[in-house]
Amino acid sequence: MAETLTKPRRQFKNIGLGQILFVYRLPLAGRTSILHRVSGVLLFVFLPFLLYLFEQSLTSETSFGVFKAVLSNVIVKIIVLVLAWAFLHHFCAGIRYLVMDTNHKTVTKQSGRSTAVVVLVVSLILTIAFALKLFGAF
Image 1 (cartoon, rainbow, N blue to C red):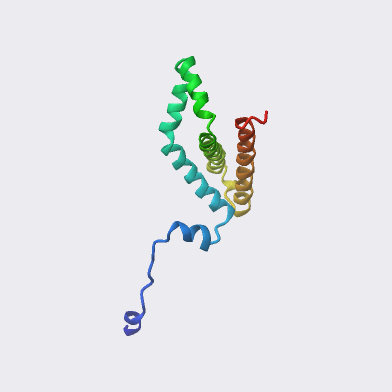
Image 2 (cartoon, rainbow, N blue to C red):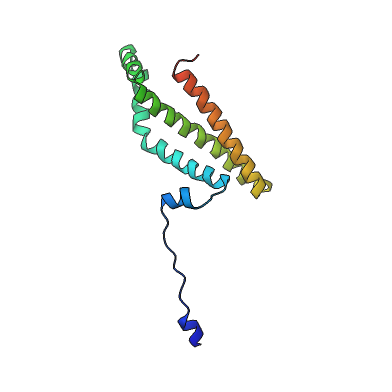
């Protein structure tokens, strides 16, 4: 009985974001999950900005001109591009989670990795297409 009393107890410590991102080697599905959460937070925080831009684009011709003037700024374009990535990634990852919820054969390590790759590739391709359109490539 004395042996159990002298054993040190395990200590559980909270880990920070730096440790999650740089110390621990998360699988690709884990990184996709974290990016899904980050994109959701970005969309929630910038919702007033998005609603303001939407309102400016629909009110009148004058307000649409103001909208175009605001959107011609490079910093605003970068913010809109980041928000477009957040929306596209959140949408693609949400579809991934819906498929995983409805088809339990997809909840394996290999299919989790492959669907994470699909989500990352599709969201990046769509974001690049949006960036090309936003910066006037076509």
